[in-house]
Length: 171
Image (cartoon, rainbow, N blue to C red):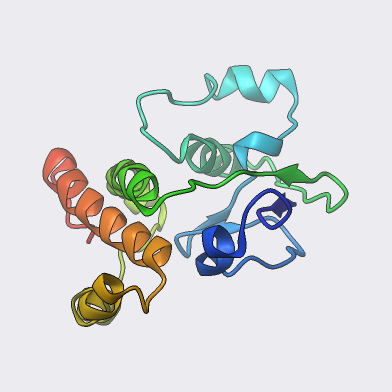
């Protein structure tokens, strides 16, 4: 289980929708995976999959878990195994990390779309960009959650850059 509450202020984690997990997370409406900071596996599985792909800027654990799933290796969830995660303390740091995450998401789509990873719907893309634009006055005035806004803006800019880099459309 991932705990972002105990090591962070509410302002740092409120935007994450932090709540208890009751199973392995499912990434990008595709397949479950085991978060890399809190994963155990058999050595032969790790070797057969050639480990984590270090070429990805983020989401190496998602890629690894999906590749394991394709081989029929199940993901099990153990709620007593808790990972306490410190989040980025400033919106600027979160923004930079989110750009890398967005680039990695486009790379994941490039690698896994043939196995069923969907791209976001046009409606989802339009809604998030509309929200990013309309929230600007509140973010500037300090009335909106700057961490949340920085995360989503960084992720979308990263997805655009990753789409160009990987020659896919994943916005």
